[in-house]
Image (cartoon, rainbow over all chains, first blue to last red):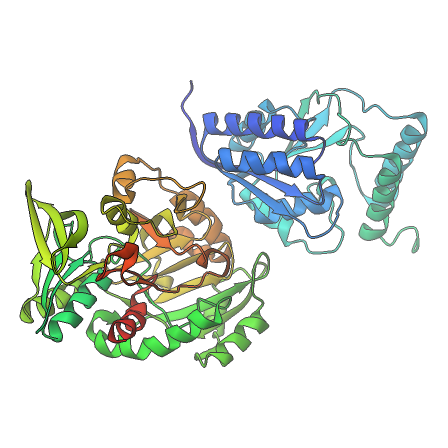
Length: 232
Length: 367
């Protein structure tokens, strides 16, 4: 086994999907972190997960070290959950990933990329995101609108997987506001960035965002970061 | 006629109980497992002289601290470091108390508190910190107190037996017998009263004596000793109330302690509960090889107090911290006082969570 890197790594993940998905994710991530880093934490953020999921996690919390669970007081969307995690993370390097979707090996790749000089590393799917025709049309309109009018350049195949070093985390968490979106704000804070291309696992039920949730998110991003289209 | 008294445990509580009985004219023997007094938990702790500020979730503990503080301060004035400025800090997130609640709480217990000056507040990360208060809180020098107590005990004729491992306490004609091992030899003492003041080993003595265990929770706690950066050398800081940290002078070493609610406890277990574990606390601690949680303590603490990044790690003190289970929820520090425990007339178990609790114990003894 290679020597552990003497750094503090945090993995931030929302509690999504079934108990089985979460248990697998927690066990694999914990093993990977334990094998590769002298100090680590796995920070899970819950916003109203089902009881069987929380029961399963409670058992894992007792057995596995260095896991923290933050429970939000109300249901919240993915970005609110992730920001809660980012604000509590103490790592020198923080990886945001979705259980059941992002591969565990990405942790090592993202940390290495940041240790080689990048402040922020974005995940980009090599597989086009599977969407229904309606969802695809909506996504295309949203990304086009964002690029043209909002100065928002989120690639259509960008994922929630992102690596942030301490100074980019500090900058990101200084941005206050009711609506904060990880994929948007990480592209706004500056610093040296790079892209990590990978193949996400097929999204499992419970992790995938529904059509209406996507519409709501798109609307929220448009109105919270810009006066457009109200003021031209 | 004055009776014979044996006190088991030479921590602060044991030493003070022994002193009290010797002053009252009893023949007192103090049995201590280590080479001297106050070598374990009475030494390896934050060295905080509690002014009540620490307990916004337990008004009773806070009030007792306010009551006991003057007595402790008067008695150990020359062993207490009052030279530093002390600040209590309220975090914006994850705090179990808001700055308004903390201010009101201090008013209620009549603890001096005022907003910290700008030169101090600017040391903190405004994004994470809601308020900084100047308070009056001190630190004790455990080594100086141990020296003082050793002299006082010797002066009043207490026989101090160090390296004495108690094997059992049991009934005997006219009182109790204490069997102990010292320098490879088994010895015994008879007494009318025996006090078990062994803190983390109370139940170990109880088990050896065949009496019921008491419900206790133990933690392996890590107190990190650091050299603070220059701007914090004359300051103590406690961020509360929740998963936060404290750094303050540790006078026995001329350093600062660094502790963190999340990272100081490494492992925990209960006694006298359905899922309890039977083990000798100190043997268990000796068997462990724990990595320091200092990197994590520092990583979190410097988010609130950035200049802590320039502190220098010196060493970690690992010790068993014992609390009563009812203290878990509200962080209170009640005392344990169990006279005639296990049906052994004259056998008393005593434990306190902080040094100034001793005055509550002495009152019980007077009673």
